[in-house]
Length: 167
Ligand code: HEC
Image 1 (cartoon, helix red, strand yellow):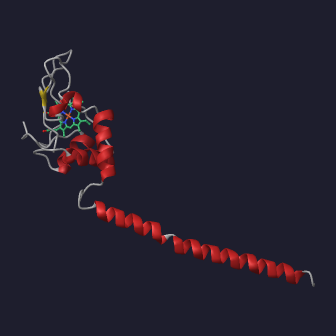
Image 2 (cartoon, protein in one colour):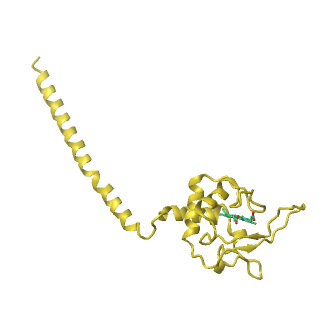
Image 3 (cartoon, protein in one colour):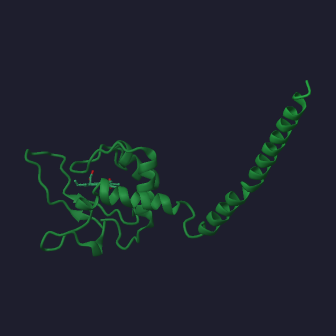
């Protein structure tokens, strides 16, 4: 019986220490979260509707996954992409092996997304349906992108300077 008291006392001490520790850590937690919120608030004026992370992801998808520049960026006389006119619309230079009546000979400008609403551009990328409600014409791919990917691409394209009007 006697031995039980020190054991119970020890248990109490351990419990109390544990409780103190969780209190401490829960007290510490709000600080970094508040700092993060403050940082985001500072970033907000530069990009009111899209985060920098979303724009960066859109850039990666456009340049390294969707390869949009292959068709939407014009080429110089040697056939290299003219990066000074990045995504500003281009003539299509690839031809189908078999005759296709709906083959499109021009890829429109995407930089700044002139002439599209965000929703229209997202519908193209998620469902392959153009702003006129018709299926998008080849050689434009019928992508079935996840909405978050389509939104990231739209955020990146909107962030680009809209140097030229829609062509
Ligand atoms: C193989 C060539 C090719 C590639 C690669 C390509 N596009 Fe296109 N894109 C086209 C062509 C051609 C059209 C015009 C289609 C039409 O007239 O229906 C088009 C049309 C579009 C349209 C709709 C424009 C409109 O007025 O209807 C959007 C938006 C678009 N592309 C975005 C993209 C994005 C974003 C990527 C990369 C993820 C991409 N495209 C990759 C060739 C391409």
